Image 1 (cartoon, rainbow, N blue to C red):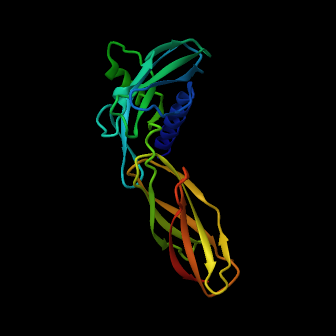
Image 2 (image 1 turned 90 degrees about the vertical axis):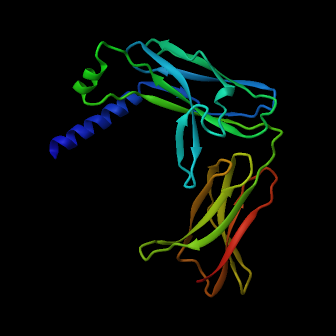
Image 3 (image 1 turned 120 degrees about the vertical axis):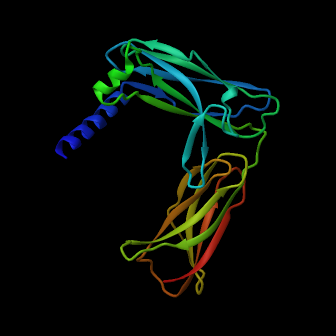
Length: 265
């Protein structure tokens, strides 16, 4: 067991150190080109290794399941893919130690490109090909290739379909919790990426006194559903029945959405 743990720790350290060999910024690209327009931005890559290194830029896609997890897939396979609209120039670079280079990412939106699309760019250190790569991998036990992912979002400014819903507010408090906890479901039913801010508001049904609590924010893609967990301090003053509301705010001039339940303090 000791040897297995030592090997596992060594692999973790190896992966961490290699991942620090190069740097890419920014790692999220937000385009808002309208149909028929072309936009471009710059990504900077820097080689932190002490040797000359080559890097490749390759496109990929992802979709989001009902739990909010990103499922990666080859470029062009997602129904929301914008891979065919993206050009990376150059897509292959060689950098000396501590050298950096600017890479141009071009978004070319077709005339029918009215919906929000997204994808990924994989920035990866190019691996050397020797005469027997299989034997080399077996000899080292594992082959770790550093890779950084750039998220690419494209949503035209003429698309103003911001819409979200909030529902199913339920208490999930356990005896071990130091605060009362509640879950609420948020769904992005529109066609724009939204920054969903959710907070609890508590109103005394007898006095109408209201208190608001710390909000939490998460990004939701169109069609994505997420469960937000919110907390309410257990030492709140007052007693009796209260109305507890979960309020959703995603900006852009939209109305606040809410759902509520009755709780006892």
